[in-house]
Length: 167
Image 1: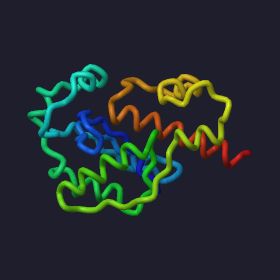
Image 2: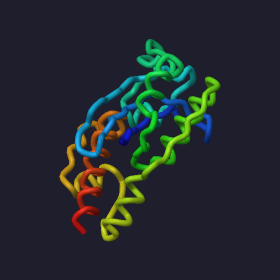
Image 3: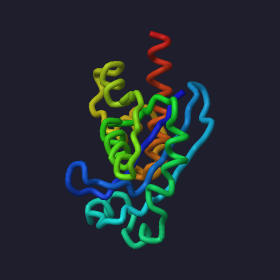
Image 4: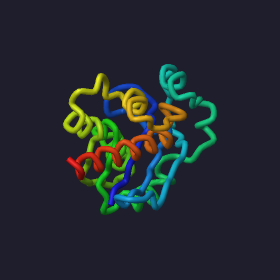
């Protein structure tokens, strides 16, 4: 079982970023069986660059719940799953830091679709999510929005796994 994730963060100093949006798709290897998406109040300033990139405004986040309010549900979705992401090290690090900030641990195996793509498709011009989606005709409606990026990552993950099975 896999939890395919993407996060958008507040920006700022390394290891001080806070999640402002999360998207999770639970994938059993064939089908998406559960999803979760939410904006999250980071309780800190969101970099202007991040607001411009994502379209998520600091003002709208102030009305949202904080990470701790979603932690139990997120942890349940991630439990006993391999966490998959496009540059998963970033998302996993940020998630671990969020859990650490509320006194909880997060431990999981991870798979990175960038690394997998480089291994399986070594001749691609770019491994950026939007470029690789264009290459494989994967729908990516709102790039730099967590749920849409996680959805596209799921489709890419399926393509990689199918390629590995048949080659």
